[in-house]
Length: 175
Image (tube, rainbow, N blue to C red; front, side, top):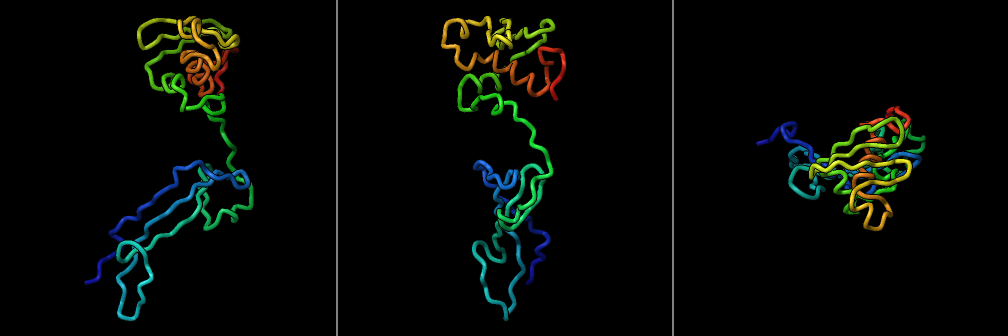
């Protein structure tokens, strides 16, 4: 009995590795399991994997969504302008523990006064003052440890300014 393959869903596996860059396109490799049709007596079975399906691989631009069979086919520049990423463009690494805490903990950032000063209420309930221009924070971590890269409060303020959640020191929102 023949099965209607329109009932089956396509299964996609998008590459989780860093995307390739080709003419400013951020390319991801997509492998897709596509349902086929039941072979007749005259068909030759050339598929791999589960019966009546085949795997196809193609490339998709993360920004503009264009798809091509080969990377090299992305000859024209990507029409979508690259937006800055608040974490990586700020020089932070998600692998660094302070950055992870800055992004995951319940921290509230308030614009203190016009200028580079912000009030940061930590998850513990303590309030610290962050001076974004001087890259200083009043928390114990910033005072007693190596200040390279800044504490989680300084990182959180910088990231929230970059995302447009709080205004920049001049009072404008960046996004």
